[in-house]
Length: 296
Image 1 (spheres, rainbow, N blue to C red):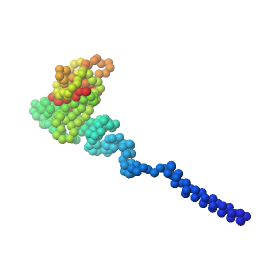
Image 2: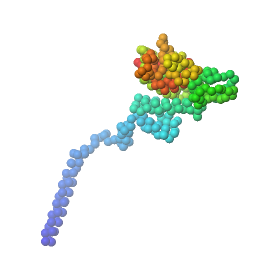
Image 3: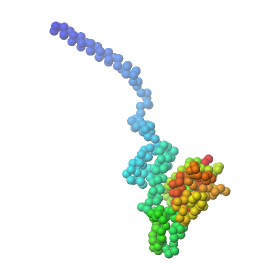
Image 4: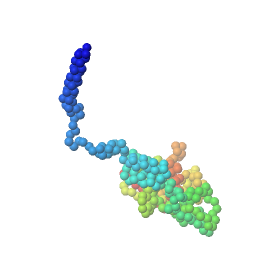
């Protein structure tokens, strides 16, 4: 029995050595067949591979957009504005471009109307004989803007020496028919971007307008209630639908709230959401510049 076991051990050793020899002989050819050697010039550095994967995983502007959202959550709005402005400059037509522009507009408007930022505002001390409308005229602003900045729900009596926060409305409107939006800009921005906010056009009926851009001025800012017009000084102006008007050639153009289905046809005009027209009526005064860009 012991000799038989010895023979089996010797046979097993020989068999293992034979198998190993066959593997050593056949394995190189198999590897070349299954895993061919890369042709010269096809081997890519790790940095290149990571760069290509980054392009695949991230849309243009996505990194900046994600960072802007993080900064907003942290309350670092100035830094977020920088990121969102960068997207508008470099990636305006990408997936994140429109949303970045919308958020940027809301941040810009909040800053513009915040009394914590007084760089575009000043304090007016009430003089003898001055009322709200005279103060608005003296400071190139609107009664609505004065009431908003000072937290007034109604125009109560003024007294000599009272102080009011006022903001000169040095703005202009850009009516971009191709993009179907109205843009609010600083009229004379000394430095930095002039853009403030967009207002999306819900309905447009101003006839055919082609060729070059035209410039005009705001000629009307009033309210309308049950078909009757009211100036900003009238008490009913507060609850009336706001209408902003300007002339384009021989045509009188209105910016007004989009009509509801049951309303009568208000005629031709540029129609926005009612809240947007309310906001613009507060920020735009008669004499502000309007630039109309054609659709094509």
